[in-house]
Image 1: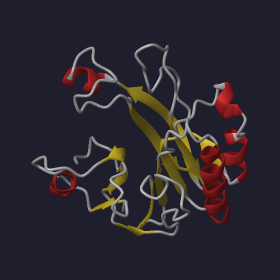
Image 2: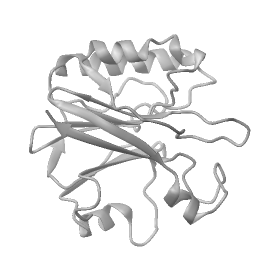
Image 3: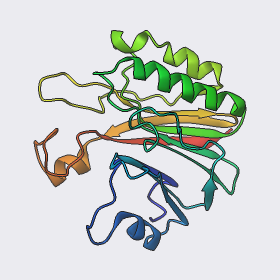
Image 4: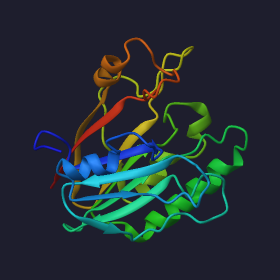
Length: 218
């Protein structure tokens, strides 16, 4: 990390591999004071990685050990020495078991409720477009507001571009407490440069844009 890069980095769909240099070690060598990766209980699921320039420690919300497929590995919560709580979260693609969406959303909002008023940032692939009919049934923007979190606005663009769709906004950032979301953008530049014209392919290139959010203390 350098001064030009993010104070907080959250990776979803992270799978530790054999690549050299390994991501966690690379980030530590380039300015991250702490790097944490969610446990997957040996399931092989995608995981969450959080790196920060400020040191952090685990908690206060533990991973959701609720017996729901893929839920455990796709959540990680840490607290910076500044007191800011950072939550990295990916909602698994439960299209074949749609009741699982409701179960995990209920768990998440139940876990966030006691932290209302705290300085908190939640970022990740929520697998949710707030304009999509399937997702509006969960009242997510209203429920985030109920636990004291507001959406960091993105002016334009999409974060996911399927091969046969106009694209969706699936990646989001929310803030609470004394934090204010100034703005956010979906950045496709680095992905397109790495593999031009190839989104949603199987070459190790992300099929989601990078969400870059500017957040400040009020």
